[in-house]
Image (cartoon, rainbow, N blue to C red; front, side, top):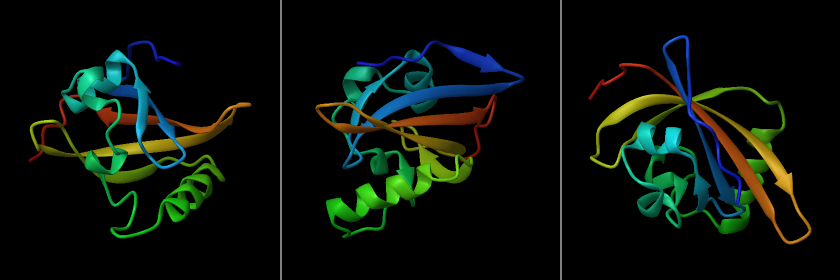
Length: 121
């Protein structure tokens, strides 16, 4: 599994999650744990849509979710979304996706950033 190192630059928290092709969290580093206020044990296996609203549309098929993740990887841009931490507190987050292909599976590297001290409800 891939793990990210702790990152804090210019007052912005950075974290990384590894997603499977359907949007389930496979792995995360300590910075992502801090951003979402949950341990890796609580994050791994859950759908990223539980933490980042608007990433997928409700009721869509798994194949649509995969295609949408691939689409978000295409231009390398950072996009804003509303997220929720483990306690249900909302905050703004920006994310950037990269597609990773191995012999066994397709995965997505989700980089996210959140301004330090952003505690908006």
